[in-house]
Image (cartoon, rainbow, N blue to C red; front, side, top):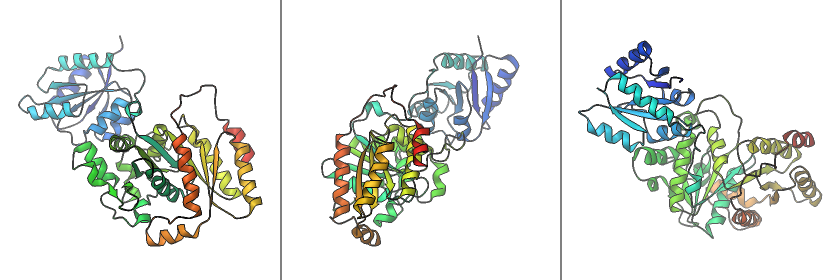
Length: 397
């Protein structure tokens, strides 16, 4: 039988060195890696993570993300510190063991956990138990995606309790657009969910006029490296417990750069995987169409629900040009609903004042998008339906 592989969190505790030496000398399990930073616990391939209760990086989010990769967590506590045992159980580790237990017994528990390790990773989120509807708004940068997401949340709130969360890890803009303070924000909400540092509701702005719940984005885009996709998904899940619809802005760039669990654009890919409906926003120009089709192909790799609603933003008045835009999209993406959103001076005026857009052509067009989102339902994956990426890009170029 192959020995199980462990990742051992390196801390200055006696049991860590004793366990490491025993496994190297006598076997029973193979130490795959010594973990110092939490990202290593997610990047490495192993069966069981062995970690002490004092490791400051051990959170419910990290445990959930490790479980999401099909791995088990063995928590170690001091016999004289029962609070450490309770802490580990609260984090939902798979098993706990006293630090003064002999190394041979450690190896036995590790082997038992490894035998129970699932072959297939669990999903990051909890979509199966989620009652709220998740609508992701995405598209290439510079298309006015955030403006569409804000108004879509306002329109959906006319029919159901709605939240808007800014999950953009490149250029978060909802707070700036609506004139909101940068604190509290998504990081504050994550702290509330993962560490119990205040209620999540304290991280939510509720605008008195439309009544939409708003979670502002990261205060600094460089903070993306400090946030894991699973943490953002669990904030969405917490919002979904109280509300009917969650609109997620931030599905921009999607390229899978690097293997890290905090990899660039990993949040956007995770949100796509969880969404019940995907609204793609496209700029109304030939270049905008080409860029959108590339984004569409990328998005189709990360979601079982291809973007079925395409918003062509800031369309010109010319009927001929409008017709060309619609024809190009429908030739390449025959199954999507295309909504033309006119260029409306009210949008620019609202942006200058940090207000919601007044009633006009823009808001009426987004009302149509909201109606289409209402009609969208969760569907099962049809294995016979595939996206021919080469064909789409060939037509666009």
